[in-house]
Length: 342
Ligand code: PEP
Ligand code: MN
Image 1 (cartoon, rainbow, N blue to C red):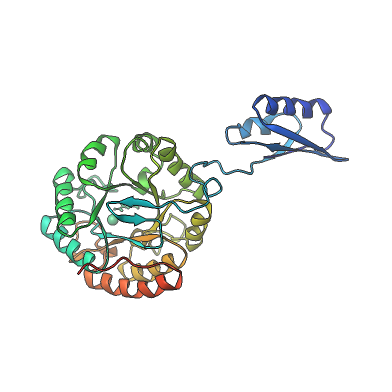
Image 2 (cartoon, rainbow, N blue to C red; image 1 turned 45 degrees about the vertical axis):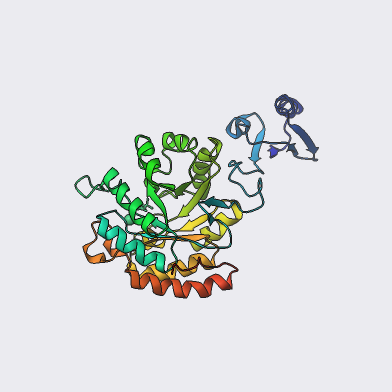
């Protein structure tokens, strides 16, 4: 951390800061200039209260050097985190493809979708049984009945299950059926939920909040990591901006930047990012080119009849076409697609 003092700051103000920092087991090194003094602080600064330092007399500016998200930061752990679930690796060179409908609607819909997407190479089946809906009058999900359906469809096709947990009270039932628990965008800063997920033994995929900065996103991941659960996957799904043509705005820059800032696996969700089926494939290709470790794609056997998010759901055929194109991009950026199921 660098503390810049106001010009001609009195010596006692500088000494006061030095005493405070030393008392916190840090090493303050004052660099006296002719007009201004700068104090370089050596040691782990992350527990310091920056606002308190800024309010001290004669302080002009305080500049942290280390990231406040200690466990999620690449500066703490250089190598990529790879999460392994039943032999499937997330975060390495193999792209993780999560596909399936927005909501679990019926056993037939789940089994059909699982068979089709696994044939194209998806190893992780998605589908919401607890749905966060904007209006209380829309379909809210089949809850445990839906969890049973997605588990059965996944088992039939040797796939993993990812599904959303909306509230801490749902954790136990979801743990019975799912391999990965998904925290939705609307819950990114539900700190009670995040703390509880820090205590479970299964991976958690955290989606970026609708208006979260990257720092807030990574600090939310930090809650789960700090609780003791190291198996955290990030998911960029676009944020809300003044652009209203598409459902959200996906920053390709953010995809590359998150990979710089954090060692955690990063999945991109082009379905919720765009809200339009026609954009899913091109945006998926761009996300992988920018460094994503995988994709989450909404696929429905008949999008026109989907109970939720039909506009952004692609058909199994469109999914197969996307995967063929993705193969070329993956090779270009040193990644590979999972083997297709025979
Ligand atoms: C979802 O994946 O079904 C979902 C609700 O996404 P998000 O939380 O990103 O809106
Ligand atoms: Mn959806």
